[in-house]
Amino acid sequence: MKKIYFGTNLKMYKTIRMTLEYLHYLEELTRDIGREGMELFVIPSYTSLERAVENTDRRLVRLGAQNMNWEDEGQFTGDISPVMLKELGLDLVMIGHSERRHVFRETDAEENQKVKAALRHGFTALLCIGETAKDKAYGVSAEVLRTQIKIGFSGVGREEIHRLRVAYEPVWSIGVHGIPATAEYAEKMHREIKKVLGELFGRDGLEIPVLYGGSVNLGNACQLIVQESIDGLYVGRAAWEASAFDRLIRESMEAYGNQTTE
Ligand code: 13P
Image 1 (tube, rainbow, N blue to C red):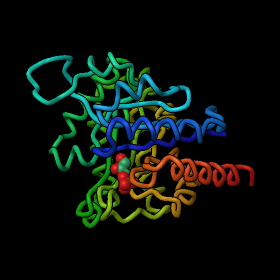
Image 2 (cartoon, rainbow, N blue to C red):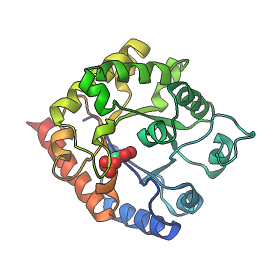
Image 3 (cartoon, rainbow, N blue to C red):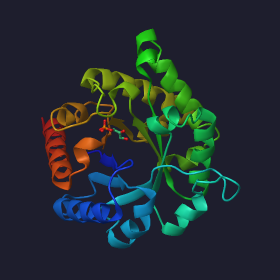
Image 4 (cartoon, helix red, strand yellow):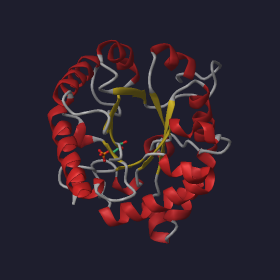
Protein backbone atom coordinates (compact mmCIF):
# COMPACT_ATOMS: atom_id res chain seq x y z
CA MET A 1 0.00 0.00 0.00
CA LYS A 2 1.41 3.42 -0.88
CA LYS A 3 2.11 5.92 1.89
CA ILE A 4 -0.35 8.80 2.17
CA TYR A 5 0.35 12.25 3.51
CA PHE A 6 -1.67 14.56 5.74
CA GLY A 7 -0.49 18.05 6.59
CA THR A 8 -1.87 21.24 7.98
CA ASN A 9 -0.71 24.80 7.64
CA LEU A 10 -1.69 26.80 10.72
CA LYS A 11 -1.12 30.10 8.83
CA MET A 12 -1.25 33.17 11.15
CA TYR A 13 -3.48 31.41 13.69
CA LYS A 14 -2.85 30.01 17.18
CA THR A 15 -0.62 31.40 19.93
CA ILE A 16 2.23 29.33 21.36
CA ARG A 17 -0.05 27.89 24.06
CA MET A 18 -2.76 27.02 21.55
CA THR A 19 -0.25 25.40 19.19
CA LEU A 20 1.22 23.23 21.95
CA GLU A 21 -2.23 22.11 23.07
CA TYR A 22 -3.18 21.33 19.48
CA LEU A 23 -0.02 19.31 18.87
CA HIS A 24 -0.43 17.42 22.12
CA TYR A 25 -4.00 16.35 21.26
CA LEU A 26 -3.17 15.54 17.68
CA GLU A 27 -0.27 13.35 18.76
CA GLU A 28 -2.38 11.51 21.34
CA LEU A 29 -5.38 11.04 19.06
CA THR A 30 -3.39 9.74 16.11
CA ARG A 31 -0.80 7.72 18.09
CA ASP A 32 -2.34 4.36 17.13
CA ILE A 33 -2.27 5.04 13.38
CA GLY A 34 0.74 3.25 11.88
CA ARG A 35 3.17 5.76 10.42
CA GLU A 36 4.51 3.29 7.85
CA GLY A 37 1.35 3.94 5.81
CA MET A 38 0.90 7.60 6.72
CA GLU A 39 2.96 10.74 7.26
CA LEU A 40 1.54 13.58 9.32
CA PHE A 41 2.99 17.08 9.45
CA VAL A 42 2.06 20.40 10.99
CA ILE A 43 3.35 23.83 10.01
CA PRO A 44 2.89 26.26 12.93
CA SER A 45 3.77 29.96 13.24
CA TYR A 46 7.42 30.93 13.66
CA THR A 47 6.94 31.98 17.28
CA SER A 48 5.64 28.51 18.22
CA LEU A 49 8.34 26.51 16.47
CA GLU A 50 10.96 26.20 19.20
CA ARG A 51 8.48 25.01 21.87
CA ALA A 52 6.73 22.82 19.29
CA VAL A 53 10.01 21.03 18.51
CA GLU A 54 10.73 20.52 22.23
CA ASN A 55 7.28 19.12 22.95
CA THR A 56 6.44 16.96 19.93
CA ASP A 57 7.28 13.34 19.16
CA ARG A 58 8.57 13.81 15.63
CA ARG A 59 8.10 10.15 14.78
CA LEU A 60 4.38 10.93 15.03
CA VAL A 61 4.16 14.51 13.81
CA ARG A 62 6.75 16.15 11.59
CA LEU A 63 7.17 19.91 11.93
CA GLY A 64 7.88 22.61 9.40
CA ALA A 65 8.15 26.37 8.85
CA GLN A 66 5.79 28.40 6.68
CA ASN A 67 8.49 30.24 4.73
CA MET A 68 12.15 31.23 4.79
CA ASN A 69 14.73 33.40 3.05
CA TRP A 70 17.24 31.74 0.72
CA GLU A 71 20.32 33.47 2.18
CA ASP A 72 22.06 32.10 5.27
CA GLU A 73 22.26 35.62 6.70
CA GLY A 74 22.05 39.19 5.48
CA GLN A 75 20.20 42.47 5.30
CA PHE A 76 16.66 41.05 5.07
CA THR A 77 14.79 42.71 7.91
CA GLY A 78 11.86 40.63 9.10
CA ASP A 79 12.96 37.42 7.38
CA ILE A 80 14.14 34.08 8.79
CA SER A 81 17.14 32.23 7.35
CA PRO A 82 17.59 28.49 6.75
CA VAL A 83 20.41 28.49 9.31
CA MET A 84 18.00 29.78 11.98
CA LEU A 85 15.42 27.12 11.11
CA LYS A 86 18.11 24.45 11.04
CA GLU A 87 19.09 25.48 14.57
CA LEU A 88 15.55 24.57 15.66
CA GLY A 89 15.87 21.14 14.03
CA LEU A 90 12.80 21.31 11.79
CA ASP A 91 11.90 18.63 9.26
CA LEU A 92 10.44 20.65 6.42
CA VAL A 93 9.93 24.09 4.96
CA MET A 94 6.90 25.20 2.98
CA ILE A 95 7.74 27.33 -0.02
CA GLY A 96 5.53 29.45 -2.28
CA HIS A 97 2.17 29.18 -0.51
CA SER A 98 -0.50 31.00 -2.50
CA GLU A 99 -0.69 33.70 0.20
CA ARG A 100 3.07 34.28 -0.14
CA ARG A 101 2.80 34.48 -3.92
CA HIS A 102 -0.33 36.63 -4.09
CA VAL A 103 -0.31 38.75 -0.92
CA PHE A 104 3.48 39.17 -0.69
CA ARG A 105 4.18 39.08 -4.45
CA GLU A 106 6.80 36.32 -4.36
CA THR A 107 7.98 35.12 -7.78
CA ASP A 108 8.75 31.67 -9.18
CA ALA A 109 12.45 32.59 -9.30
CA GLU A 110 12.40 33.43 -5.57
CA GLU A 111 10.62 30.16 -4.75
CA ASN A 112 13.35 28.35 -6.69
CA GLN A 113 16.08 30.03 -4.62
CA LYS A 114 14.23 28.96 -1.47
CA VAL A 115 13.80 25.35 -2.67
CA LYS A 116 17.54 25.11 -3.39
CA ALA A 117 18.42 26.68 -0.02
CA ALA A 118 16.05 24.29 1.81
CA LEU A 119 17.68 21.26 0.14
CA ARG A 120 21.18 22.63 0.76
CA HIS A 121 20.36 22.75 4.48
CA GLY A 122 18.86 19.25 4.59
CA PHE A 123 15.17 20.15 4.84
CA THR A 124 12.32 18.55 2.95
CA ALA A 125 11.01 21.27 0.60
CA LEU A 126 7.23 21.48 0.20
CA LEU A 127 6.60 23.57 -2.92
CA CYS A 128 3.06 24.96 -3.18
CA ILE A 129 1.66 25.66 -6.63
CA GLY A 130 -1.73 26.55 -8.04
CA GLU A 131 -3.52 28.54 -10.71
CA THR A 132 -5.75 31.57 -10.09
CA ALA A 133 -9.43 31.72 -11.08
CA LYS A 134 -8.37 33.90 -14.03
CA ASP A 135 -5.80 31.35 -15.23
CA LYS A 136 -8.51 28.68 -15.03
CA ALA A 137 -10.97 30.84 -16.97
CA TYR A 138 -8.38 31.37 -19.73
CA GLY A 139 -7.79 27.61 -19.83
CA VAL A 140 -4.11 27.90 -18.92
CA SER A 141 -4.11 26.03 -15.57
CA ALA A 142 -1.82 23.24 -16.81
CA GLU A 143 0.61 25.77 -18.32
CA VAL A 144 0.74 27.77 -15.09
CA LEU A 145 1.42 24.65 -13.01
CA ARG A 146 4.07 23.54 -15.49
CA THR A 147 5.83 26.92 -15.20
CA GLN A 148 5.66 26.96 -11.41
CA ILE A 149 7.15 23.45 -11.19
CA LYS A 150 9.82 23.90 -13.86
CA ILE A 151 11.08 27.17 -12.37
CA GLY A 152 10.50 26.11 -8.75
CA PHE A 153 12.57 22.93 -9.18
CA SER A 154 15.11 24.31 -11.63
CA GLY A 155 18.64 23.15 -10.77
CA VAL A 156 17.43 20.44 -8.37
CA GLY A 157 19.32 17.16 -8.87
CA ARG A 158 17.68 13.73 -9.12
CA GLU A 159 19.49 12.63 -5.96
CA GLU A 160 17.48 15.18 -3.99
CA ILE A 161 13.98 14.26 -5.06
CA HIS A 162 13.27 12.12 -1.99
CA ARG A 163 13.23 15.43 -0.09
CA LEU A 164 10.68 17.11 -2.37
CA ARG A 165 6.93 17.42 -1.86
CA VAL A 166 4.39 19.32 -3.94
CA ALA A 167 1.13 20.79 -2.68
CA TYR A 168 -1.35 21.62 -5.43
CA GLU A 169 -3.60 24.34 -4.07
CA PRO A 170 -5.72 26.15 -6.66
CA VAL A 171 -5.84 29.79 -5.52
CA TRP A 172 -9.62 29.92 -6.06
CA SER A 173 -10.17 26.99 -3.71
CA ILE A 174 -8.31 28.27 -0.65
CA GLY A 175 -9.80 29.90 2.44
CA VAL A 176 -13.23 31.11 3.57
CA HIS A 177 -14.23 32.27 0.09
CA GLY A 178 -12.70 29.24 -1.61
CA ILE A 179 -14.66 26.77 -3.72
CA PRO A 180 -13.27 23.25 -3.31
CA ALA A 181 -12.04 21.68 -6.53
CA THR A 182 -14.00 18.61 -7.59
CA ALA A 183 -12.15 15.33 -7.21
CA GLU A 184 -12.17 14.94 -11.03
CA TYR A 185 -10.64 18.38 -11.60
CA ALA A 186 -8.04 17.85 -8.86
CA GLU A 187 -7.09 14.45 -10.33
CA LYS A 188 -6.74 15.95 -13.80
CA MET A 189 -4.36 18.63 -12.50
CA HIS A 190 -2.42 16.13 -10.39
CA ARG A 191 -1.87 14.07 -13.53
CA GLU A 192 -0.48 17.15 -15.29
CA ILE A 193 1.80 17.78 -12.31
CA LYS A 194 3.07 14.18 -12.32
CA LYS A 195 3.70 14.45 -16.06
CA VAL A 196 5.95 17.48 -15.53
CA LEU A 197 7.72 15.81 -12.59
CA GLY A 198 8.35 12.78 -14.81
CA GLU A 199 9.79 15.01 -17.54
CA LEU A 200 12.08 16.74 -15.05
CA PHE A 201 13.28 13.75 -13.03
CA GLY A 202 12.39 10.65 -15.03
CA ARG A 203 10.43 7.75 -13.50
CA ASP A 204 11.66 8.64 -10.01
CA GLY A 205 9.87 11.98 -10.34
CA LEU A 206 6.58 10.11 -10.12
CA GLU A 207 7.52 9.13 -6.55
CA ILE A 208 7.42 12.77 -5.37
CA PRO A 209 4.30 13.03 -3.18
CA VAL A 210 1.73 15.48 -4.56
CA LEU A 211 -0.85 16.66 -2.03
CA TYR A 212 -4.13 18.40 -2.79
CA GLY A 213 -5.08 21.48 -0.73
CA GLY A 214 -7.86 24.07 -0.82
CA SER A 215 -11.09 23.76 1.23
CA VAL A 216 -10.46 20.11 2.05
CA ASN A 217 -13.06 19.02 4.63
CA LEU A 218 -14.80 15.93 5.97
CA GLY A 219 -17.27 16.08 3.10
CA ASN A 220 -14.74 15.87 0.27
CA ALA A 221 -11.58 14.32 1.77
CA CYS A 222 -12.52 10.71 0.96
CA GLN A 223 -13.40 11.45 -2.68
CA LEU A 224 -10.11 13.29 -3.10
CA ILE A 225 -7.79 10.77 -1.45
CA VAL A 226 -9.02 7.82 -3.53
CA GLN A 227 -7.93 9.55 -6.76
CA GLU A 228 -5.00 7.76 -8.36
CA SER A 229 -2.65 10.75 -8.60
CA ILE A 230 -3.47 12.35 -5.23
CA ASP A 231 -0.93 11.25 -2.63
CA GLY A 232 -2.17 13.27 0.32
CA LEU A 233 -4.24 16.13 1.65
CA TYR A 234 -3.02 19.53 2.77
CA VAL A 235 -5.65 20.98 5.03
CA GLY A 236 -6.29 24.43 6.50
CA ARG A 237 -9.44 25.31 8.45
CA ALA A 238 -10.83 21.78 8.68
CA ALA A 239 -7.69 20.59 10.51
CA TRP A 240 -7.32 23.29 13.13
CA GLU A 241 -9.15 21.30 15.78
CA ALA A 242 -7.18 18.17 16.57
CA SER A 243 -10.26 15.94 16.90
CA ALA A 244 -11.63 17.11 13.53
CA PHE A 245 -8.27 16.49 11.83
CA ASP A 246 -7.98 13.05 13.44
CA ARG A 247 -11.45 12.17 12.10
CA LEU A 248 -10.61 13.46 8.64
CA ILE A 249 -7.40 11.40 8.60
CA ARG A 250 -9.16 8.23 9.79
CA GLU A 251 -12.05 8.53 7.34
CA SER A 252 -9.67 9.24 4.46
CA MET A 253 -7.43 6.30 5.34
CA GLU A 254 -10.44 4.02 5.59
CA ALA A 255 -11.72 5.19 2.19
CA TYR A 256 -8.25 4.70 0.76
CA GLY A 257 -7.87 1.28 2.37
CA ASN A 258 -11.31 0.22 1.14
CA GLN A 259 -10.39 1.30 -2.31
CA THR A 260 -7.13 -0.65 -2.47
CA THR A 261 -8.68 -3.90 -1.18
CA GLU A 262 -11.61 -3.82 -3.61
P1 13P B 1 -8.15 25.85 3.58
O1 13P B 1 -8.21 24.36 3.76
O2 13P B 1 -8.60 26.60 4.82
O3 13P B 1 -8.85 26.30 2.33
O4 13P B 1 -6.59 26.25 3.42
C1 13P B 1 -5.76 25.47 2.60
C2 13P B 1 -4.38 25.98 2.67
O5 13P B 1 -4.08 27.10 2.34
C3 13P B 1 -3.33 25.05 3.16
O6 13P B 1 -2.06 25.56 2.88
